[in-house]
Length: 482
Image (tube, rainbow, N blue to C red):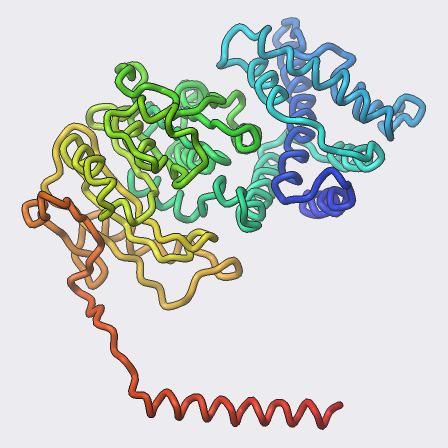
């Protein structure tokens, strides 16, 4: 129902000179979707209050509601052209009145856990990038047709929004920072098996993929009581994100998946001194894909970590270890060089001493669009590592944008990790067999022969000659056609 609407929006956004990337498209669509969502949420809450004989006080003043500034309707429900703003008038209102009003909610909100605070936080971090108020009017008219009132509508919108986030990630540049393939996330969650009552945390939130998938997993894990749903909504999912664009994208993504007031803090996780983390700040489950090699003022954050490093992923890992409760479990995606890099040796030592690194999933290079080789670390806090179970994901095809990782690719991994089965692709190493000087934990499959077999020169020359003949035949046929 909404798929064509999203396509039409993107076609319009491409015509606006103020928007140039997939990231721009997602960001600008997000704040408009958020305000339309807020309109529908307010209507639902008002109706619920009326049915219960109560009075509901709206969050927004009437002048700034969607139905006042974005889509004032006539008695038939159509756009009232006499009242509707467009062109420069619309852009001026959005920039000079609407955004300043919405920004003010951050100072007025009672706490950071309220929807009012989220409104203020979001609109303090983004700007209206539309140069054409006429294009903005057309986009608003399309978004007006989108409803957030039934679970089916929210589900469809959330799926389409995920597609937009994936396109943003696939477009390269900074977009790739925010997107972790959802089949991989779902597999990590299934391997860890969180339960209702767990506090789940991602300190490198991005587009909130880990949290929305954890929400869906728990929501469908069993028949939930009213108290279970309250716990899931209010006391389960927590995140932090430093950058403004992923902050709003992650917030909107969680809202579309059904989390009404996401517990996402717009803050730099690495700016927190990990020695000051207390028990109340710790979590049962941590799921994350921290950025590696990210732009960061290392000099200002290194002092917050006992093991200093210029690699942000190693700082994040220390934060996650410290933020995990005793008995808590983590699934962390990290660059595979962490397992052997000399600069990461002391972080590895801290991980192995304070946690049981019970499993390592070795992933192919093209799981991520950047082509970086990664692994997933599974560890449990509170007991040292004695042995590690490795699983190497070997696929019979090359991954890429048009041939991405899917959940079926990871099915054998889930089957094997359930009992830590040893197979052609999985094996154990005892920590006693690891060199204590280097703590090199590299993935070296003892069941695979990695010896390179070189072809004979005559075989290579013969293949080149055959390819030359085929090329000549193709060229000859083209010339005949011309």
